[in-house]
Length: 138
Image 1 (cartoon, rainbow, N blue to C red):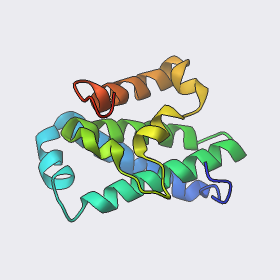
Image 2: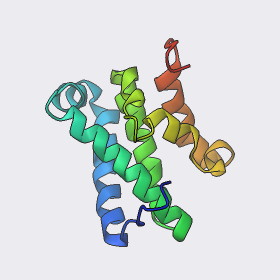
Image 3: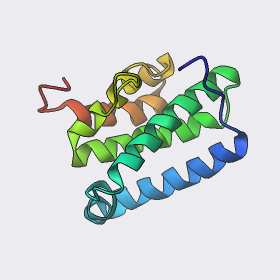
């Protein structure tokens, strides 16, 4: 994470986790509705991508400062990006010259996401959704 990024406050992490969990639950129960209402909505897309980016940055800064409740929130965020990637694989390429892409953020998560079963279960389906049958992301 950017060294200038302040860790997210505990109450912000708690609210973010609940919101992400609700959206992920909706994706698991009615993906078509979520796709139409959120992922396909051109007016919401940039805000959702920016929110994901900002949460990645803040949660990773919080994790570096003091591991704790942000880890569950980060798992929810990784899952949400996976649901978004199932709708549109190119979303993980969102970024700019001054901002890293969401795919880069996923690939540079802490080592536990590549080794601990709970975190692997969050990351690997998201990576599969982002790169399978997509030469640009693979």
